[in-house]
Amino acid sequence: MPGRRPSHGICASRLAAHRRWRRSGGSCPAADSSFPQPHKRPRSSWRRFQADLPNELWQADITHWPLADGGDTEILNIVDDHSRLLAGCTARAVFKAGDIVTDLHLAMARHGRPERMLTDNAVFTGSYRGRGWVALERELTALGIAHSHSRPYHPQTCGKVERLHQTLKKWLARQDPAATITGLQAQLDTFTAYYNNQRPHRAIGRRTPAAAWNARPRAMPSRQGIRVSGHFRVRRDRVDADGKLTLRHNSRLHHIGTGRRWSGTKVLILARDLELRIITQDDGELIRELTLDPSRDYQPQAPRV
Image 1 (cartoon, rainbow, N blue to C red):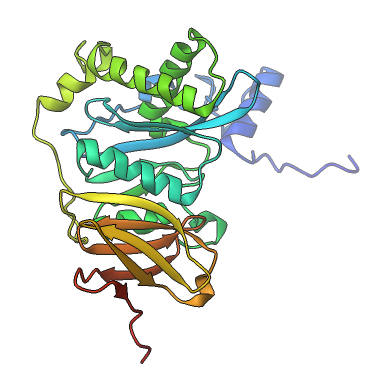
Image 2 (image 1 turned 30 degrees about the vertical axis):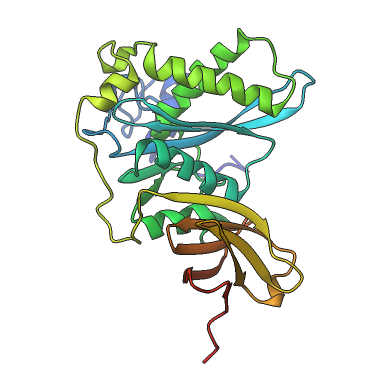
């Protein structure tokens, strides 16, 4: 017949053969006519994974929640894969690269460093957008923390933090709507304390996440990274017109040179005792890395070779 391609008795694919068999009620050599051909894997074939130790794997993801006036906010949740401990739960209007690094350090200050992080491909990586590394990837590498990503459009890979989003939103829906981000953060802090210390979790034998997290020794990063002391802080600042920043250490104010080309740039100063790393807030570009000299008020730039 004109306009139709000859089939020569060969089916293009198993799926096409199955559709043809279902429509005609007949059979086709390339199709298995005994059973329907599923379009998706059955749920029974999924293999459940759980890390063996606390801090062996953290999952992180961002979700959205409205304020009382309808304004949108973003919430970053960080969940321990083994115990389901909610290591971080922070609300912001919009998360920038530096915000994620800041909140990661807040979570590590409370619960230690994870061995590995698992995230999706949204704001947590720049590779699929052709932009190279983002701030989180640089910081995890510096800390010796492995980083892996879920497949695009496959939220099941980060299933534990996705499930936490649902639990959190059901709880928030029963509260009075927060008018401000500060008010929403207060609600998130209340939820975190309840979820970690009071709410039994079916997936971990009806224990609380805090009990499961404390029941076993914690994993630590195995990769080579920079030395991290027990005392570190994150400071937001803006480079002044002369290309300098200020940082107080042991009640003494120090000036740090970055160069005039960075004038006006919003930055994060990541301080671990005397070890400093200065990155941009927007895209996490490393501006300078140095060891603070407490005996000098001004920390000059290294001379160019």
